[in-house]
Length: 264
Length: 366
Image 1 (cartoon, helix red, strand yellow):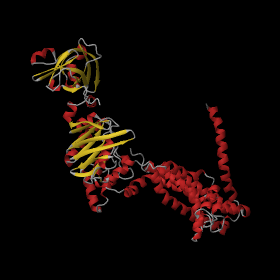
Image 2 (cartoon, chains in turn yellow, orange; image 1 turned 90 degrees about the vertical axis):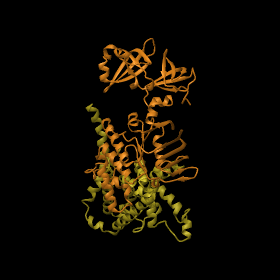
Image 3 (cartoon, one colour; image 1 turned 180 degrees about the vertical axis):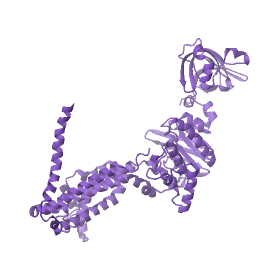
């Protein structure tokens, strides 16, 4: 029995090393670099940081505002074509981001299906900050919707029924019962969606381009900096690793410790 | 006063029920999956039937013909689902005041305070539901429902989540609550003891239909079909044949014996069921046989016996019978021992005609 377990230890060690070493390497390489602080103040870095914060929070806001009703609908109603809608919503999670970028360009770009109409009335989306936000929303919204739907589904409908009989409207019930009970799932989904938006690269570079201060978010800045300024690339990478790690910890603790426990 | 008629066909199940309930405690009794909970939801307004009519205290809250359908918010019905559905993210106090948020703060406080006092919940105000016992949870659910002055109280399996010793106490508590508030209360249960203890009026459900409704005495002692007789624990449902009707007596033949029952309109040779509850069978001591006039005396021996708590259930096979057993008899343990039935095993019983009930055999075969 013991020797069997020892054999299992080998892949565990190999995989752990394989996953941890590159992440460790980022920090080990960034620390001895000179001028880390100065690098942090370079326009390339500060602009990328600023843009990433603005765009990722904007796309998160879009995901929450539009995704919440959709998630509730999917959780509560048996719509005809719900399976199709479901698949459509999940699709961006498996679609290669570059394909998503091309698809967005073909829809909203200057010569795109909708884009040519918008262009005629003077609205240009391609290669603007708005395009970055759209690209991020496209790939990150499914993460929020999926989590929110699961969260809403886990709320016992009997609780909502009781709230109705106590005089609460559907909206009041949603705010006072459904949302508070689904909150851990909603927050978890929001954090995952935000992290996905923050790391968005493929769709952004295809659809929004790589313009400093307008569309160059952190991942894009890292890509550019690798050719000219390794320190900047490392600093930005380290920030993203830290953020990703914290996000996962946060999500795990949110999902594990539902504040209300079982109530049945 | 409550008047209910609802019908809906869905997922291969057909709910088609109609009943009335006057004030007091009314029990909807039947096996799970009979449509009991769905009926409560239809009354509460959270389940929409296809056709029907629901009238609460003279107000039509649903009528498919007149296209009236009050939303649950406007029905003024207190609804306590199975497991109580307390809001797990709110404290006991917040749960109770949940239906009062439209009131000014001091009115909310006052009303909530009254209910906490009344339901003996002082000291538990700030606990969350998961920190409370089943009985406390039930009291909070009742207080929450009653806070908004409903006209009708709907309770779905109120004792399902509780241990047996607690059930008895809470049945009593529930009956007291009903009496104090004078509110018509509709209780759904699949538990015979609950139904018997609480139902002033009993509505028996089976497969989405009402198969009998009436007072507790009617339903438990005069079931109209074999199925109802089974549900209400009649115990002895014996296939018999009508022999003749005489002045004051209906004579049946069962297992070769002539049985005298209360007069009823049956033609000779009608196939019937002779029903008697196990606790209603009298055991006759030979030395007291002559004490008074006896009827329907049967002799036999005990073929099996089972002790539950303080009751013995005996299975008796009549002399000259080749059935596994013919009668099920229940008696208190002390009687069992006083009659030394454990040694004797032979038994004479009397089926008093007041305890006998006759059902036509074709009833309810549809």
